[in-house]
Length: 450
Ligand SMILES: [Ca+2]
Ligand SMILES: [Ca+2]
Ligand SMILES: [Ca+2]
Ligand SMILES: [Ca+2]
Image 1: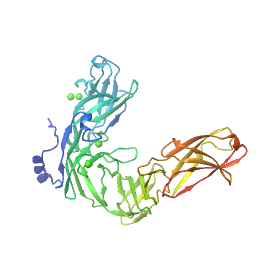
Image 2: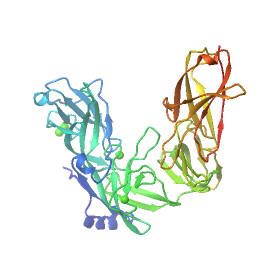
Image 3: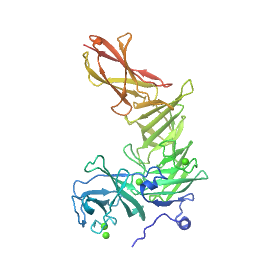
Image 4: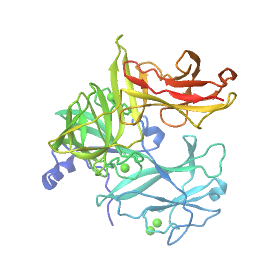
């Protein structure tokens, strides 16, 4: 019989340090579990794993006595090489209240499992707590989670989630200082040390109370959320974060990587790159040049900052396709261009010539030199949509129309009913964005109207 292990006590850690040679700065975190709503008072986000109903029942040894038409799920928890856990939802159990059966010992026998009744939580139902022993890096430990059903407007199925009912909290040492930290299983797979590997993927988080105000700031960048990765950048230096799979230990080691030099012509910027070799996402700030661990990266998110003549701070945020690849080679320089000066492009969704009275849809985007779409905003201000300006060919301004957001990331659109007055004319249309101190080239389109 194995003994389930929760996080080690300080006394046990001392012994392990002598025997196992763990890094001396390894913190020992305390495992907390409970209702997610209660846990979120300390940790803003606990994570989730989306559960998809299976089309066919999985191969199981024994089923519980079911009252209704069951829905089957597989939940991935613990070590990657373990079989997923079988979950059964019986909508008619407990007099029509519904119940969840979770194969706690993962032996395919669900007849032996106790039905879990729903509790109302978070605008839906939550079944739990599920208290399961997981193997993580080969050692067994306790993990608490809930199965949540989110239903909108009484829809029959709804969406199903596995929500962690736990996190680990304690202290971490960084540059000789001690900070409060929490380790969160954001992708809800029972392990606390997953890297984010691509844009459609999620990794786990380490919260560090950097400003020591007793709270974890969940803002995405510049906050206190460390997206767990093999490399971590803070105030111009790189570190090697280490979190154990069970989330009980967290430390920052020295960032003794092989570096290349990243060069761009922006004075102030922030970028996030996905590693294409499986080391997780990294983020760092300019000015250029920056020493960056040698790796093959894909661009994920980019921010460029500039100040205008009146001292206002402006920000351009770029994301999405094209998924540019960037190779940072050891001891070599990599020059790259992104962000402004922008190109403002207006695209009619159907080809001309057009008729007066016809309604044409015009889309506009602001593209950076990397080809990505960008949003531009002034600090403290709102993102202003662009205007479409229509001019007579080679002449004066005829009409101006306000655009609205729509049709994808950083895309604006307007449905333009071509006025009678433009019949038989060739006009020029362009999208005019507010780009503050950022340079912008406006591309005009010629529209021939019959
Ligand atoms: Ca059993
Ligand atoms: Ca079982
Ligand atoms: Ca995880
Ligand atoms: Ca804080």
